[in-house]
Image (cartoon, rainbow, N blue to C red):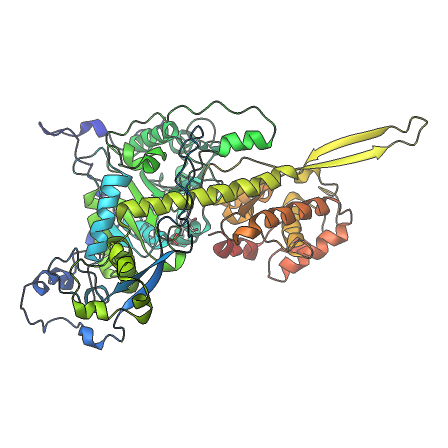
Length: 633
Ligand SMILES: Cc1ncc(COP(=O)(O)O)c(C=O)c1O
């Protein structure tokens, strides 16, 4: 084991405080981050709030110049989707509303006569320049949801702070800006090269951001339960036996713990504790990126066994984590807790997003971290994005907070013709989703995705094996039946993806000489199958493991074995059909015996500049990997 950079037990614990203060981790801040100072303009905002002040200081266009008089939307009711049970043993769940199309009309008025900035949701404030940490009404709602419901038991004193972002991609970019000094080969000393710990398969965009900064990507082996701690290639091994020739030992880890993209794994609390202990010992900041946080599937193990004719697994023990405070919601309490629940040091930076709970185009999310780190994020936002879009912040604030209780008659009249079609009772009944409605919405999404997942997995299970019969022409006419698994997979325990391991070694052409290629290798067959599946009659597009491989070694050794299938992207009625077409396509591909067919399929990718050919006989080229930027979301 290598020497640890920091000993957390050195911290003073002032008497009378149950929880320790978070560590000072400013030694990890990048040079740019250390140099950032608070924006002078933003500091002046407090003067803007003085009642009656005539502000001729700021370059803020008056609200009268905004071309929008209201911002209105027809929004779902939180009960639109039917939740699923929180535990495999539970059966009763509140069903969806009797009318799934039922909606609420929400209106953000132009100006609202409200002195409390935390309740004032209007265009005059939402569309104006605002605070980098977020639009006050929405920020305070997100902060309360995060601190009281999502992470009610963060172990450091006074709990975490939140800063709104333009989504998790933006949150991660800001995280890199906060902790990473750019490194250039030939210019900077190798000893300064920053590193990023991550799983061997990783969300593509992370690499797209980290690699150009000069970071060394340090993949950590994972087993069926997520990032491994022990054993060769596990976290302890990577850190303890760090080779300085690769750069500085990494002090940043990127991980997705609930419904990992692309593997669908949910990291248990036990494993999280082990990882956290190692990170604490080696002074590693943990970046927990959780767009799929609410999509944990309690029924996956049981339904997987049922689908495969296996005995039901024992009902899972209670996860070995007892929150000190309940979130107040059985649904949230049932989810495996975040690293933040273990974060005694204050070394966890968590990224959340509205992309998968509202819509990707919102470009809205938030960062949760200990206050001193959150303060640096605020400084970064001030100088970069300034604030997320006011349209989105205003609309989401209106959805969760609801119309102001004391709207003037004039503001009510400003509502659209459509809104006036609603009965006064319907209008009066809407008071915003609030936390309860928001959690109900999330629980409904989970239920819907869980049922989709099961539908896709059942079809995949049904076709996972190729059965071949051969009849020996003899007196007895013996018929031999052989079964070959074409792919294997675990039903995802969370998220949006099925991660399939292809048994390409069982293909008749595996390793065979090509007509132009020296050999039809695993990467070649994997790419050819991807293209084959897009052709008639299959017409189904999958993402390949090479798109998510953390580095070239992973891509070469393992990436080609995997496909990622998303059960979230297509219309409800197409989920089973997509799986069916995929399975049919795989079976048909196994019947291909002609190397020329495989090479012709590859040409289509070579057309993209993809397979370095059919010449070099390598596997998947840069452009196929780059496709991951789009398909790998
Ligand atoms: C792991 C992971 N992080 C981040 C994102 C993107 O999040 P956002 O839309 O908030 O930038 C995705 C999208 O697929 C993702 O899978």
